[in-house]
Image (cartoon, rainbow, N blue to C red; front, side):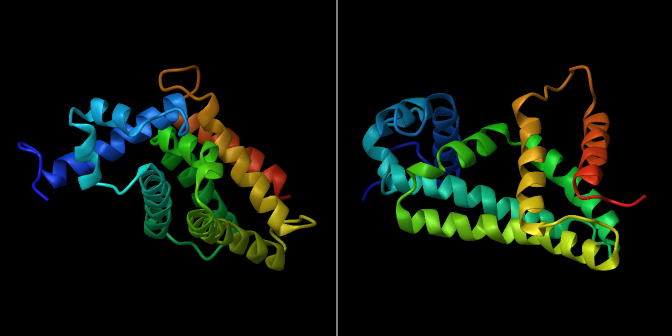
Length: 197
């Protein structure tokens, strides 16, 4: 199939994904058409199919790309043997990573329900892999006597929900700096996991 004149896959492909992410975050997956995405990118609607087979595949690629980026970025974070230090690294990382990607976070949570079952399974596995990273830290801390909690799985989900919630209210240039927000949330995470000081 001939490529649209002036189109370059290494440029247009990322523009298609960025436009879809913006539109899905603003209007919701169900309300956005491939024609709207094409108009946002500045190509003919038919040209989109050079970059994605359909809208479902596009949503899946956005959510999977986000989770792949999250797991890769976490793997690059400095490692610490001490569970308390590792938990602090996780807390600050999660807040920082998410605040840099508000649309991706919104779409990842709000549009999960619109994935086809086989795509949902893949994303759920990636989410569990990330949750398992935090739960391993909490388990290690409980084993050492650094943390006290009745259920590490519930604590894991609660901590992630609390940290992700920063995206709903934090604005750059607001009353608190990112460092101040990270410190406040770190103190709250310590309380949530029964960290012994």
